[in-house]
Image 1 (cartoon, one colour):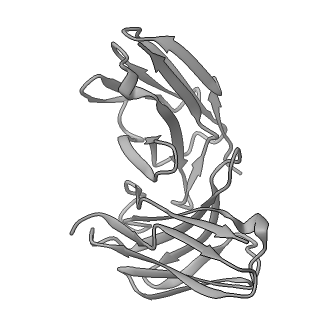
Image 2 (spheres, one colour):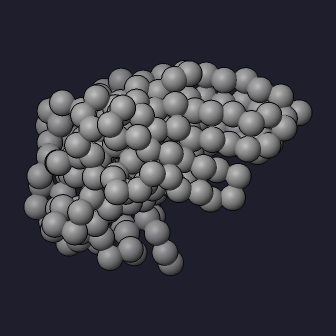
Length: 115
Length: 111
């Protein structure tokens, strides 16, 4: 398997549920990203990890909790979400700094619906 | 802070036309500029990456140019087809290496 893989592709959850989104990259990259894409809004950067260390948190509410156990895996843990959190969540990876800003590759996204 | 603007926001053309999508950025100190395509409900697919030392990149019917001094990039699509219908986004990566995205151009190519 190659590229960036996201699971699940679709998720429906209630406001009191706890769920997680998973991202795996098979490109040997060092940096991984979470983006949020809501209807009719631009792409919003949420978190960035470089060599497993979080380097960017774009003022994201604490109900979103990222985890990066290694350079190939990235999780987004979700709890007590609000209906306005319904969106397409996109994971991406790149070579990150040090090697120069490299090409960004995206997964297919996880469509989240909060009831 | 880098800002990226894409014009036009939407475009509808008949099949066969050659078209140009524009991307402008405020900070010319970029490492690269990348063009993406996004189909509805899907992830972003990388089309072309132009490094700061390059002027253009080509892939099939697509040609992207970069003019750092004027803060502009253009994506040229030759002989457009209905299958080209999608949203096209550009992203500029600067000193922080984290890309800044534009809002995209929504393209419809009708038969």
